[in-house]
Length: 333
Image (cartoon, one colour):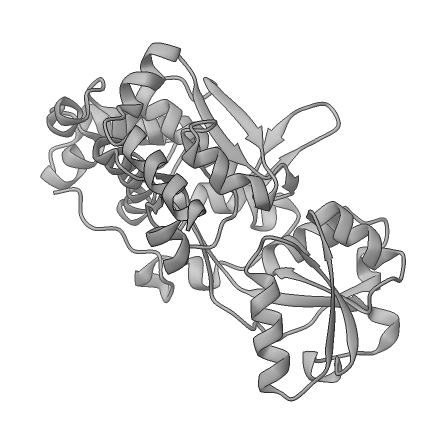
């Protein structure tokens, strides 16, 4: 009861928030990320950041500030992330967070859409010859606390009448360390994280990601409740990336598209008339700035998760709707 009251009071306190104005006055965007997952958000030994979530943060900064580098990336644990968003420590949460009804309705977060369609899986040592999750009856399984992976695993094992011993760890690094030390028979988390982890190992071929996908994990950026303009801007930044791929507009041709655009659809996407910018309180042509800075969704996927990244994750559900996937954006006009 006390927790619900504190959440309500926090929501009241930020109801009049104007994040766009705050970000513009500050000159930087504060974006909550993971930092440990190559392909999504990862900080290397030299402090360089990369990943799909990182590029999304850069796209939002380009829209608001005309500077994709004006981003302060804040590494957050699963248990910190929603509190950091509610409390104003970050303006956007782009930390491979599953969009659930509980989080969207009751935890002060508003999810703007799906940046990556994922699903939970399991990884096991290849030497065990385990080929299916159905062979994990009685297994010790490492998982990350504060994530949907815990309940998903419990439901899956109960449904298949299998015994399960979950061993929880505060983050992926700790869970992976325990798993690689042989303290668990398997490691479970989103499949994107399993692929990312495996790619960093000295002997990636020694690990097998089992074929079963046991859950829906739509990973989406989120903003605080109570700021409609900010919600619209972050949501339509995502839609701009997707729609740009559908229209064939990318980093290499966006300048030409801006200069030659006659189609109402393209002009609205790039906001060449400044129609949406005037409502949002930012400079015109913000859609153009987004694509110029990071490219379209296909480009983001290719360099962070596809063959160019070394992870070689297939587009699958993350392909455009016109190519058999689920990536679909409402038209800009």
